[in-house]
Amino acid sequence: MSADAPAVSSVDRSVVVAWRNAVFAVFALNGFALATWMSRVPAVRDSLGATTAEMGWVVFSLAVGSIIGLSSASHVLAWVGSRRAIAGAVIVGSLGLAVVGLGAATAGHPVLVVLGLALLGGGMGCCDVAMNVEGAAAERELGRTVMPLFHAAFSGGTIAGAAVGALAEWAGASTALHFSAVGAAVVAGVVVSVRFLHLDALGAGTSSSEEAHPGWRERLGMWADRGTLLIGLIVLGFAFAEGSANDWLALAMVDGHSVTNSTGAVIYGVFVTAMTVGRIAGVWFLDRYGRVPVLRATTLLAVVGLLTVIFVPNAAVATVGVVLWGLGASLGFPVGMSAAADDRRTATARVSVVATVGYFAFLVGPPSIGFIGDAAGLLRALLLVLVLVALAGLAAPAARERT
Image 1 (spheres, rainbow, N blue to C red):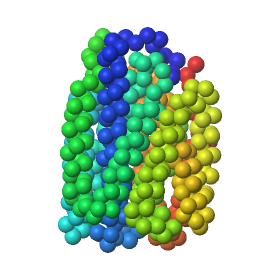
Image 2 (cartoon, rainbow, N blue to C red):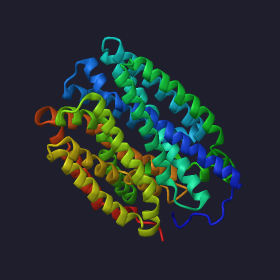
Image 3 (cartoon, helix red, strand yellow):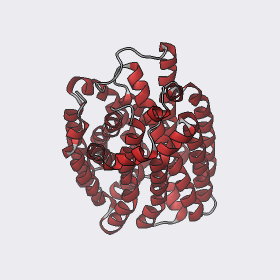
Image 4 (cartoon, rainbow, N blue to C red):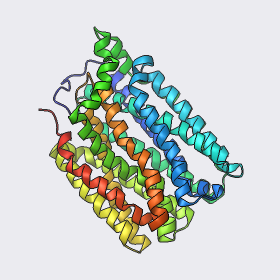
């Protein structure tokens, strides 16, 4: 927790608990929607008849949408508030998911898939900033570290999404039916959950609108803040470690370790399970040892895991590497979000900048890994992930707790 966290919540305890639970739900539902797409990447690839490099460009549209959503999020939050921003973003993202499913199921229409992924990325990018700002505010009101648990809820959602995706793949369910059903369920869950979010009420209670929402010049000025950018570098490396698994792990295991499509989806589920365990256990380690030592330790885990996946020619041993990779990638993003939100006044703007820098991994990652993978194989392409994780570990001191 940051040094300026209140010792006693200024909000009624029952309201804070309901707020916390609503944030958990929003994180989990977003994870479920994302994993729905990720678990069916091989099926979409087969439907489109795309090469690895071509799939890199298809997934690139998801990254472009994400960057647009992330970079505009602080302004959207200032204009319409957190509840409306989250609800609207999820509706846009879920519509995009349904469009992707339709495009892949109807004889492989790449234009629909690209358009749907752009909408999915835009909605999830905006929601990502908004739900992290809500989570940081709820964390301050609770007076204890909970941000990794919110991200564990996201990972829990991805576990469920990966499991449903593997089942849908095994059952031969069309992506149109699968993605549309998930999109409708996610919208319904978020529309109910946002009623219990409380950040808008706190902002309405401030004595100055400028205190609640810093002006656009100040929000843009966060891009020149060295500390904010270094935290962004941390999130960049760990987001690349997480995002490369989301985009390519199932396919890398299929193509690089000769497993079936359904087994690839299961191994992706192993990765997100390891991330969930790391985030739950990480709360204790963060409280005991602090952000910097924990980030350095998780960097080492991720590096060892990636080396195992890339260089050990055995699917079972590589799966152990996937576990280490997942544990190593688990805490960088939530720790970066907490560090960016240490100053509550500029939290929205700083989280938006850090998330945008971090999600640059999703912008450059898919095509770069796709191009390298097309020439040298997907497993060798993952060496790029290893380099960025190492750089993130070197930048770990930027996340040190305020004193």
